[in-house]
Image (cartoon, rainbow, N blue to C red; front, side, top):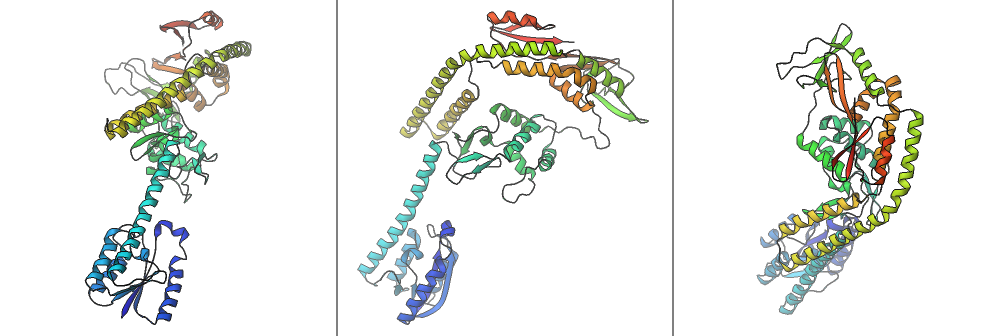
Length: 497
């Protein structure tokens, strides 16, 4: 009687079965030597048997059907089949006489009704093991999802700690945040962002090679970075620490949708180009070089503009410096304002407790709604699409409350402090700042920048909201600023040159 020797290991657990096939072969060869069996060929395969489609196994069955061998030798019946199709195929070949004997060092098979019945049970147990393992794995994943743990490899900016947790990578997380900030400026194409990412050291996790453009786009469109994640089309609130805010993420998505492609100036860089618009027609002020000097003028793309002539870059820079200097505040005023803000901060602490309690109540209510929504889905009252859509809405609402505590807990203090710092820096930027620093400063503080007949005008607007109460009167010491009511229970400070 002739036999095929068949050894198999599963690729699903390759790290635990590196020696599986060699150890099987050693034991089977010893068994063959003792039993003095004739082996046609030794066959080895590294494929899972939980589903049909193993090429070497299928070839062995075909050769048995053609009469090359009468039996199979393997370590255990589960090496031959863990699915009903392959197991049934072996039983059928035994019924038809194509296979007359099966040999296993760990199991004794008799070619009889009882033997085939017991073999069927062994195959059934092997299939049950695979099915149970799969169900346990799925149950583990569902539990991780309930805890907000992402069941996969952490993206760039995070690391897996080996204990099921995903932690912020202190080395790459700031670089991811920087990439988002650059994209949000809407001044760079994806190709430029890819080059910038490579320049400041953002590389792939495994190969440590520069990111491809597709990788950059994947990072910029991954909701994982603001604290949520998708799994099989369903949105979950993550337990990991966000790297960016949802507001920044949404802004970047808008930029990606617009697919903004700025003009590339290959020959020369003009620092004030695109910063200002024509005061008459609204077209962008462009620049060109002539005889070693840079001149700025209206593009006149809309037609009908009567603006004529050019303005030298040196003169435009002087006008910008004079405009920046007008918004400056001296050291004494700055110190007084900061001291007042510090007092306001102490008063704001009293309202924070109430605000936190209100937010916690809202979060608990959202969790209850999520629980009720899940019950409705399990009961079949709503479809899977309705469940996913409503769940995503609640998750985003929860994220909003987590990022925006609400209330009057002093949210206006930091924007006001930033405003004062900008105003305090104005004299330095106007006096000693580079052209690039002046450009960045003007972009931060100015809007409606216009140039007409060599006369620069623009409005400076730094809005923030503040509840109207007894402290509103204290705004009077902000010399040069006038509180303007724009909506119920709020004021906006506007300064126009």
